[in-house]
Length: 149
Ligand code: FES
Image (cartoon, rainbow, N blue to C red):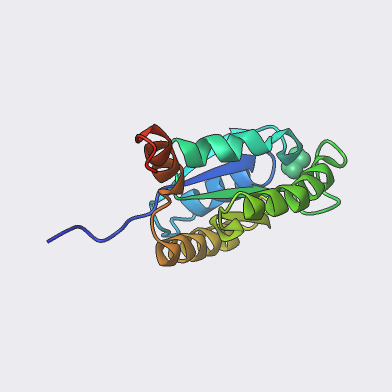
């Protein structure tokens, strides 16, 4: 019998808000799904769409991007840049045939440990429902197989 699917999720978070919120969830001993690996960055404005694609290429089933609430970015408007980039990137994902539902975007402040735990649980459940992300690996396999006429 096979193991139930446990999604691998990479979370790119800004250090000032969401990372501090994750820290608060931990120090408050809130329980949440262990499926997320956090990558801490100075600001969501620093998160390139290439980071997200690379995470999916390297085996992530889903990606979370989270930072300061609008108006609270420590670099003034990095999160506004990230939000604009996300709107374009979402259309590109759709165009590439990758479900945009695999990438979630949220705002979590340093005081929202409970919200962080709830978000991780809901993202994990959503990605579990979508199933494993293996489109990239299927495309590589197809491109390497000999052409048939
Ligand atoms: Fe948190 Fe910019 S510092 S989003």
